[in-house]
Image 1 (cartoon, rainbow, N blue to C red):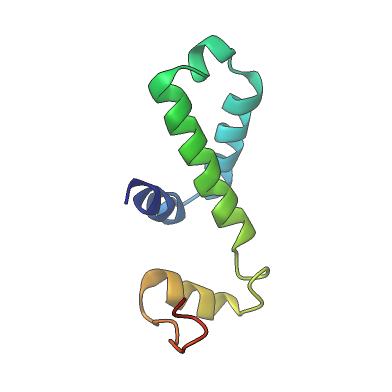
Image 2 (image 1 turned 45 degrees about the vertical axis):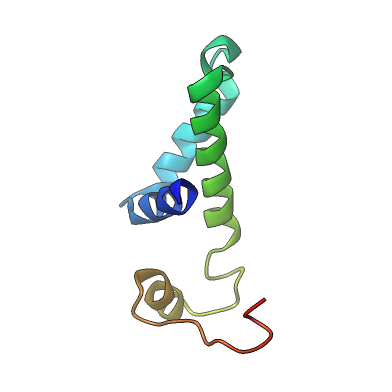
Length: 87
């Protein structure tokens, strides 16, 4: 549930490109003794993973219009369910 909430928070940011830049900056230039221990490592790994999901699943890569993408991510539309999409 933490991971899902993290993705929602990152999507809700007004300027998530700046957030992406900041996380990449920390990943590249922070000293490993500060980022690769216990809680900071856990948090940075989860944030990086959430951002990769957001980057990979934007409307262009999903082959849908921006309006349709926004409707799905805001909860206005629900994805159609069928036997193939129910796992």
